[in-house]
Image (tube, rainbow, N blue to C red; front, side, top):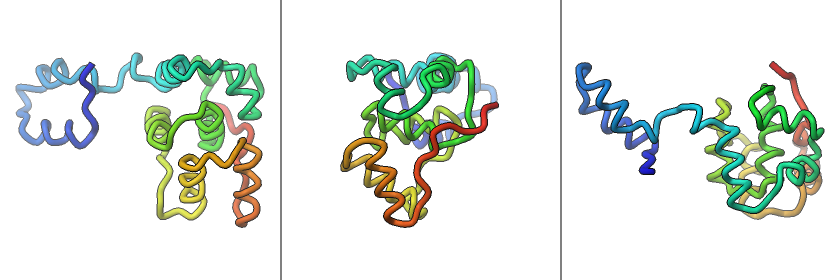
Length: 153
């Protein structure tokens, strides 16, 4: 699989004519959003690569197991980015993998100019401990802790 990032695709699109759209889609199908590139598939592949079970993620992320399974199967959705961040942190995702997971879920990536996000970015890089430890750091610095569960769609 030769997946291109958004910038690479944008460069190709800059040289693509309308009558070449179908060819563009075919040539770049591995990079386009699809069911196989969805959040649940992405997370499950990473968990498999890392040798981590979903149950471990839910326990470490302090996410109700039933709710977590529904999120990772795509049966339920959340509007709370913190829930996805809990999953990513508990799954030992890198910052880059987390940014990609957020994007695949349709949520904004962590943004370095937002103080709370900046602290979370550092936490993903340094891995200071558990989700509870991250929440303690957030609270010590005057930020809201990562929420456990959110509004479901």
